Image (cartoon, rainbow, N blue to C red; front, top):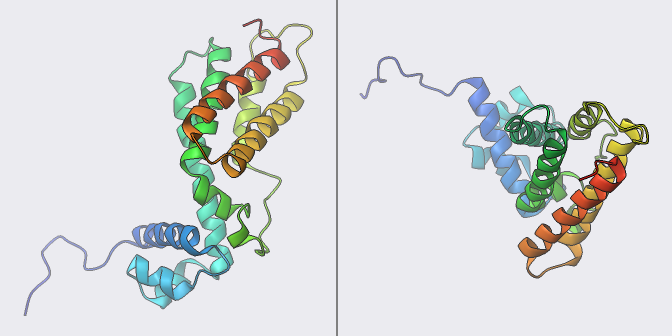
Length: 206
């Protein structure tokens, strides 16, 4: 009989099993949509038993919300890293870096984003709604409110953050769902336009 290798666990830690389920769910949700996805297929992709699924999640809806939360957490971490690369005094550069990465990450992960937020026909009947409280939106609001010495005619930072966020998000969504050719070039053009809009609205003088 083959004995377990000393020092190596016979099963994965619980956090790894949970991550495997989230990874598998992402793939199945993108392929089938949330409504058509089956728990047994997700557990099979993850290499775990059905019982293990229910140790971590109470339902498919619970799993979907966990996938969405991880998606947002990773998005926030990625864009915070992009902003951290620039000095604190370069506030305009930090805003630009955030907006550039926001558009690019949406383009890169459009299929997963859309199925998680119900933008695609395959997922149109899902009952899960987008929460008005979004860590990604809040991260952008914080960045805008960090502006040092704003000019007297600068707009209210919270309203400015909401307007600019809605502009890049809505425009990127429209680009991906109505333009099917040369997405990369069009995304570059969109980034330039969004940054120009942000500079004008924020009165940056750049």
